[in-house]
Image (tube, rainbow, N blue to C red; front, side, top):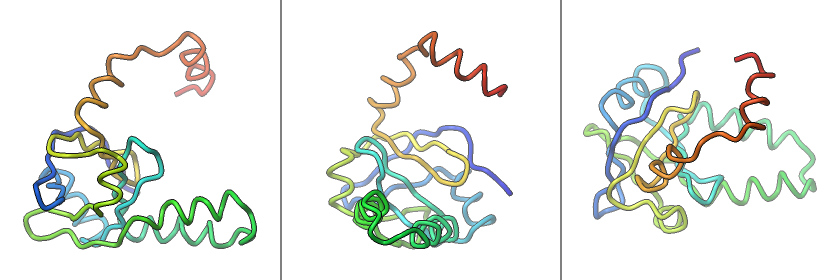
Length: 146
């Protein structure tokens, strides 16, 4: 299976449309098609899932007990997002509520995270890159034998 990787500068226009970088748009189209699910699972990050990837995650969550509070919260939280089509120019509409909560406007960074694309405000990406790993985190990574 193919994986998205790398980060790219991008923008969100005044109408709330994310302009996907050309390379990621091309990969998305050839690997998965143009239908995506746009949501947020973290307060600082927008996620763009190819619809087949999202449907698999959703299927696994729905297979869990419906009264499991964590599953219920995940489904509620994620479903503030929307299924969208990437247009011929590589733009995808970001739902207004999600855009407001994640605080992504104009300049953003889109990065490949394996099976989905993460979108963060440029300032957030800069802050993350400027934060070094702790000794404990480096030890935990070393234990993973990456």
